[in-house]
Image (cartoon, rainbow, N blue to C red; front, side, top):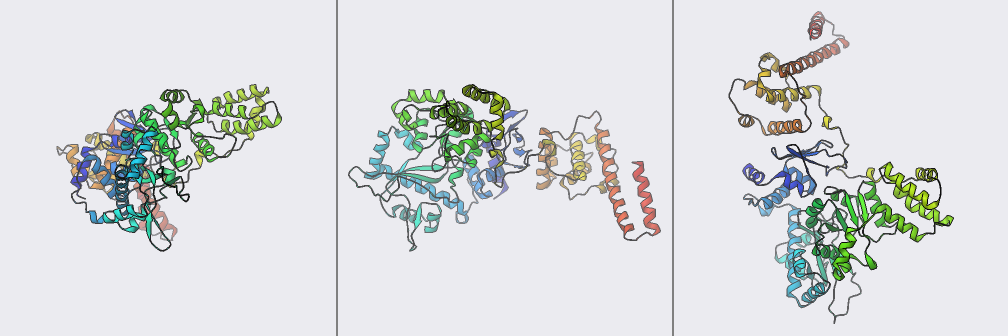
Length: 593
């Protein structure tokens, strides 16, 4: 891919806006900052530089440009990131050869063509139109059907597969996209049939999978072999544990409102968006997972849940909520009247829906009310059951002050001393959900001042290069013979030498960049970005003194290395007069420094 097309994409797009589609960013001086999406943290160490079009996390040391970000956040290769950003920028990829597209790119196309096929079936087939009327009767508007791209899978064995093969896709590709099943005899047939289809998209809005609800005409006999709901199986594109239905449409509103409403079904999401509650996503096909929580955490720390949850049981839903609480989310529970699901409530009364959303219970209040309504606090068994529900919930609260509020409330309900409740609370043993991450992106958090491991020499090269960039006059007294001290295999050392060699020339910073290799240019850009965020150079009254101190340290390091080499020679028995003389000369020079 020619550099000019990459540069054209970068010139048309803004890195901060690209990243805002995936996480919250706040202004911090001339840059933006936020919680890193690649490792769990509570203090923002992820920075974006609009001027340099670079991002970097000073906690896990990941960083790069917009292409690197898309590769890391979407788990794609450079070609796929390039195509994604080119589409956003409206840049045609002139040298992009469709014959050598990656397998994932082909699967994306299969999913998109499949979605188009289902959309057409909803309006063109008689059974599809009947399914469309069913959706309208359920309160889903025509605009919502089009916006969420709802479709219909016909009651046929292989009409979709035949359509896709006619479009140039192989049976293997259709199978790998998850829309076909291979029989024991090797024959491929459609996975979805006689179903209302809900396309599932990634955060960029690209279709990656499908959910299907069985539907038969009134005069048809339902096929008992067909499950009511089925989903695309796990594929190279679709992993249900990492996807939230509707998040591609909800993410901007989640960030704006600083809260995410989590529901359980496709129609719940669609009806909520239709009712004006657009910060809603669904965990369809799975319980709430750690990966889903990590994605939501990019946008907000506030969750409103509408799950049917048994606080006294060990349900997958409760474990998901416990996991969210352990990760530090502020969780509230929306309770709906009449025990209906969100789609039903919205269809019957938007006013009741709006009221429920505006008046959620805190997770503590929800547990408290539920436990006290289910068990008799006047009996020993009831007290034990209530404690078994409430104490683990309290133990997961990171704030001791907040814990004390609930401890006091339990003590009041049980008419006992708070010390007794604290004693029982200390005995509760729960896994720390915040420390259970096992994915490969988890990296240890570091202090911002120790962004990466460097040798002493590397740190000095960087410091001297930055001083030279800040004021070239500070390096003028340096004798040229000291250039030999700089190991130019280090990008920082090579950059410094080029700065030194262009003394006396009237050259702008932009022109200086043209004298650097791509590696050196990227290194300097990152170094200057790092200096903006976490100053390597402290305020110095005299930059020359600062520079000379670095040069002395560099000379001292070089002399100490020579002494060490001579010591090794002498340990091996090489103690001739020349070695001893050299050792004494270097020791004397080192002492003067």
